[in-house]
Image 1 (cartoon, one colour):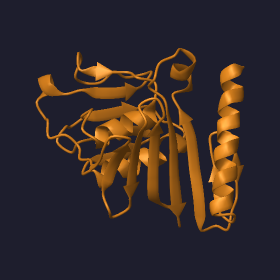
Image 2 (tube, rainbow, N blue to C red; image 1 turned 30 degrees about the vertical axis):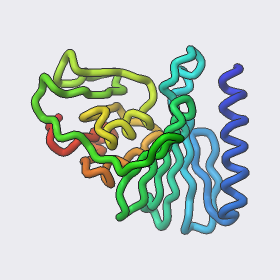
Image 3 (cartoon, one colour; image 1 turned 120 degrees about the vertical axis):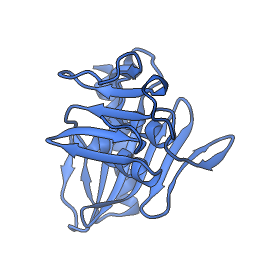
Image 4 (tube, rainbow, N blue to C red; image 1 turned 90 degrees about the horizontal axis):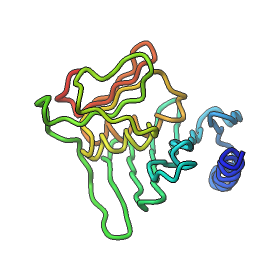
Length: 193
């Protein structure tokens, strides 16, 4: 109950601030959907709530601004680490923190023994055993692929709000993102899953 109430309060505060910025934009979260002017839409997810409850710092706020059905701006914020992963369509991907800001790129690793792969699956395990990590926060996992902390991420179908920002981050950092039959695969472009 505590987590549900806290998540609802956080979501409500963020959505009310977004409505001040673009009052005519639509809103989409796993729990709320509000049509807007048909042009702009904010897509918001609080990713990793189960981690938050257990005191695990691997959770994030994921926000994407979509215009005409295309993600234009992506933000994934890790509040405990105070890191903001940011991408703008056509302008690259970046990480901002209190100590530094820099452009991020996917890793160059491709040898199986060197890879770290994040996953969020129930039916399949990553193809390369021993290098996989299930973290419980898909939005932050995608940001980590974009910044080279992970080499790939794979998942069963997820709510679009969980991946909207991460998809743009991975692409703008030089990686590949695909969704085949709902299954999600994001890589550094050198790993074949």
